[in-house]
Amino acid sequence: ASNDTLAVALRLLRNRDYFVEELRRALARRGCPQDEIEYSIEVCRKRRYLDDFKLARDIAHRVDFKKHYGPARIEAELRKRFADDAAVSRAIRGLKPESETVVYAVADLRRKGVLTPSQIGRRLAARGFSEEAIRSALDELVRD
Image (cartoon, rainbow, N blue to C red; front, top):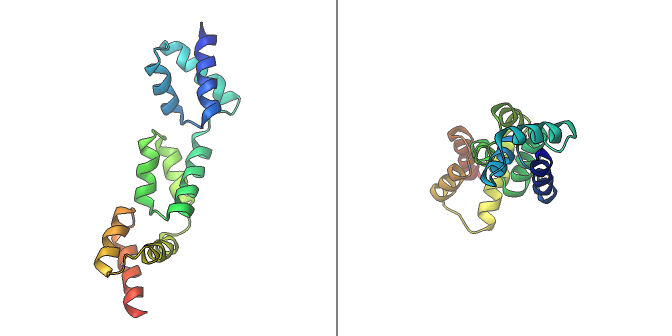
C-alpha cells in the first residue's frame, strides 16, 4: 500500500517541486495514511527529489531577480509554501544585499509609471523592503 502513496508523491513531484511539509499536506489531503506519507517522504529525500534548501534558494533567487522583491516578501512567499525555518533563513541570507535589490525595484516602478516618492515608498514596503532600504532609495531619488 505504501507503494500507492509513493506513486502519488512521485506523480506530484513530476509536475513541480514541493517543500517537504507542502508534500506531506498534499498527500494527507488525498487521504494517504500518515505512516505511508512519512515513508514516501523519506524515499523521496533519499533520492534527492525533495530538498527544502535548494528549492528555497531557487525560489528566492527567482523572485529576487524577476520581481525585485525585498527579503520580507520573499520570506512570506516561502512560508506560504511551508518551507522550513532553516531553509528560509539560509535562502534569505544567500540573497544579494537589499540595498542593491531596492535600486532595481525603484527602476521597475518608475518604468511602470509610479513616480511620486510616497507611492514608490508604499510599493517598496508592499514588496517587502525594510524601512532603512526604502529611506535610502528615496534619498537617492530626491538627489537625482
